[in-house]
Length: 158
Image (cartoon, rainbow, N blue to C red; front, side, top):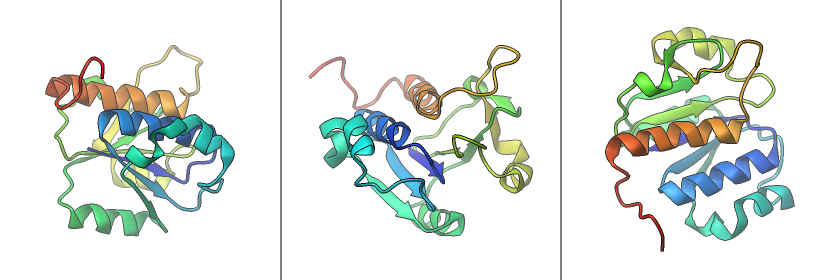
């Protein structure tokens, strides 16, 4: 599975997502521009000592990440948004699927959401709540996919 963060802005969120990706052996793709440097102490602190376990790729733009994912035979794309779509838990995820998340402040670009309306996924929330924290949203989606697969190659403890 692949997680793609399009122009992430907040270092600790990306660090927490990196930790989730390490814990689930999920590939992490970051699409520039980033709102921080990967050497940022807040990114490193949130990711703890798990960074060596993260399969990380940084891409200069969306076209580059699409090409890279096509080259590795990635599966279906799922674009996460608070603006509607199919509920995330109603989707059957494939082992090579791609979970795409946008910026903390604005989410995914409107043009991307319009181009991929059928692949938009939503995590339900109470009325009046604008959005969930990005790292929480990624964890919810990744672990739903893992649950569907029976948590392959993950154990309860070391």
